[in-house]
Length: 178
View 1 (cartoon, rainbow, N blue to C red):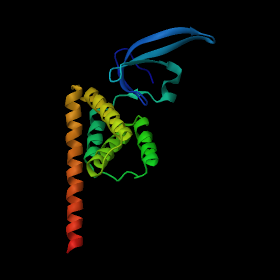
View 2: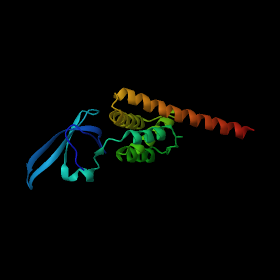
View 3: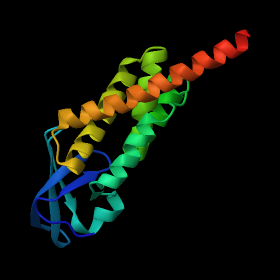
View 4: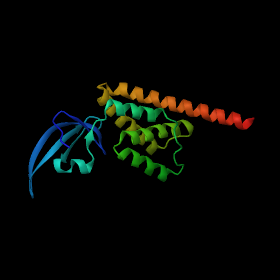
């Protein structure tokens, strides 16, 4: 996959960023070219070898159509995360580090539900914040919006999911009482 300077991309571990340069460096085994990617969210710059770009999983920012699918996942009924901290953390880490917006959306939605239903540990809170930031940055890039506007859209979508889950639980408890 070829990218150009100024193009927005997503790195699976670091999230959305922009290619700011293409460098050529001499290494032991010869000259190699690198994409220089700057990540605004965490003030980081990374050099990724052109020959490894696909292996690492760097991809284009999602389209507006795909973004709508992500928002639909955020609006869907949340699932219960594992009560065991290590199992929950491992599962959420897998989702966040996949670099796939749909999986990150699942993590954000389900962690938000857990926050509403119980409480979040410090690690859970950090994961939720990281996931929401990654999604908000990519949604903002997709729609050419400000990150705070995209974050508001994400929070509203998740609020719909929480309200729907509450209504379902209330309906089920009323049915059991009868």
